[in-house]
Length: 503
Image 1 (cartoon, rainbow, N blue to C red):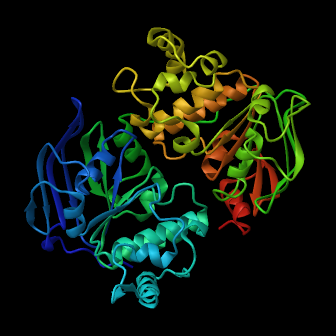
Image 2 (cartoon, rainbow, N blue to C red):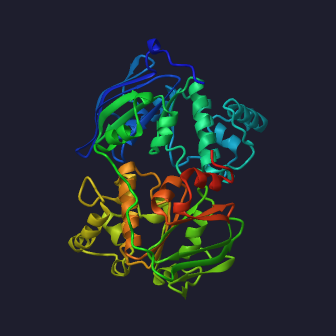
């Protein structure tokens, strides 16, 4: 149970009227924000609402164009990254920033290794790192290599590192994205402990239910401006979504035509090391079958194997009854199978290329002839932009400049406008806002309605209940259950995925 903050003490950080523009486009429009010690303050908004820009101003990445920032009652000049850290403001980004080849201890102590006579005192490194973890109730062996940790453990190590460095204000960006329910619960427990220790926590998340369960206060940004800031107890999910989007967002399950006879996508006995063991599923044309399990448990390996990036140890894959050769990306594409990765930044999109170039990259003509007149490329890309609802502030910018939701729509448009017979979608709504999520769900519904066989890998029970006709539950690489979606409740589905009983 947290100790209520003392309003008389004043905010640890006070932001007033902060503005910031990039190339004439206003990213922040006079934003106010108060952060109190011992409080979890959720920062909400759609992709592109200004959350990242506000965080970057607080962390000294970008200077504000106008407005003021006070820390502990003292007005600050232009913040730099070094100055923000000295003031105790730090962040843990969604993309982990650990040195994956180093140990946990080395990561926590990096930049502050204790030495004697010029030599690192490794025993002290391990001891101090262990103290940083145990002080936050984290039980992780400091001699483990960071690359061997789960995503949740990596998050905890980064948090411990920032707290050890004197973090008084800790900004957590999507800390539970793509985590299993168990791992997400561990991270939330850590966040509550930070609050109880007097840290001011800024919590950024697209998960409405999570925010309502953990936040003490919620601030909503929309189109760069402050829309609402209130105690979480005064809000409800529907009003929070309305504040974020500016309208009601309804994502209901539509009526779809019955799946066709025969199997559009057949996977039998697919195995690869310990990650995937004898995985079997059949998906009819016009059907959506979900694979539910902890993030990283089989889903990513399925992408590698089905797309042809890796060869399995055993098994077979067929599209419309025809065998798909393994280990050959071109053969997988030629079969009519399209695989959309959950890692849009590294594997899905070419960040330095424009929106239109990315949209057309999977088309045969563009793949053979990379050089196109811009007008021709724009004419070909325009209907895809419209179909997938891609919005850019300027005409045809680099895709990396778009919000996460728009990048995801570009990725889907790139592959799904190439007339697939079957497709595999890996966490298609990871890191997108509620409006983009509803749009993407509609696009997936449309795929099935067109007769495409859709295999969906998701770590979200809500998404599975919304989209799937059937669900296959996977644990430790093995299929542990299969259900018709109409014959199971959400709580029963979660319990099955976790190997327990519904609460």
